[in-house]
Length: 45
Image 1 (cartoon, rainbow, N blue to C red):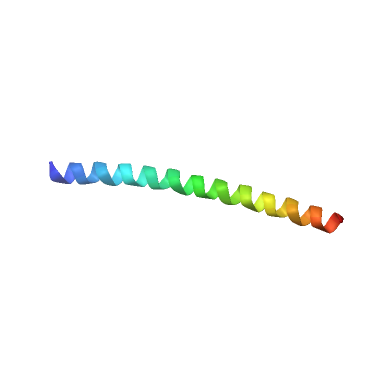
Image 2: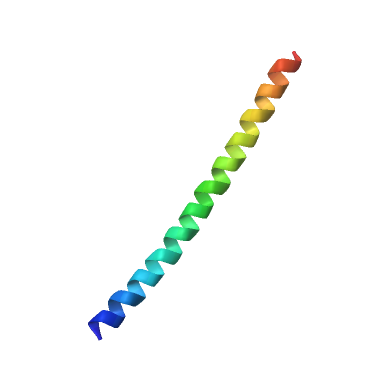
């Protein structure tokens, strides 16, 4: 019983960690896009 409970907790933890990582990756992509846009607009001036 205890082992099953631990396994379930681990699975839930892994899923939530994956979601967090995806969120972070998406945020980083948006930040990088924004930085590229700023750089390109600066070089135009």
